[in-house]
Image (cartoon, rainbow, N blue to C red):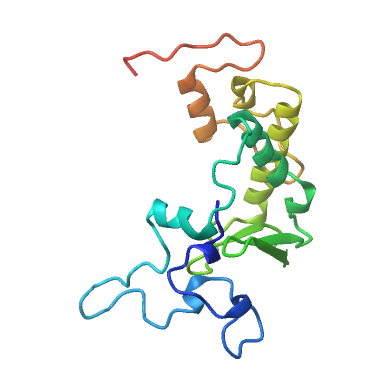
Length: 198
């Protein structure tokens, strides 16, 4: 996908920095002076980025368009391999990562979690506790490992047997409900078929 900086309607300050700023801006709102909404009229400010696909394709904004030759399976594996890396694992030691979607940069944080910053507002779009993030990260790493071994999507969607130390209880919840609704069974169990009466 094109970077947010490539689809802005108006050019921003050079190198992504505000005039006189010491730190590069990492969100579109840093450059906009008008409020997001006019409080007297309720009128929202116009979007600062292009939304017309034809205009986005013009002018070299999206040079990788139609160049992807990977299958959906390869893209899924790449997603889990990337976000399942140890460097994104976080933990109680406070060694987390912050990813800025605005310019595809990242930096260390002391929160012990993966922080994704909105390219428009700069706000954290996934405020996790360390425990929750470690649980999610362990599933990303498990999925990457299973896909590397050639497991099917059905096998990938099976509930894991355990969590890494300190991640709490596994079992039940929404994941179990989805697995049951899809008719998947754990190895050694008989798969149930969803019925129309449920």
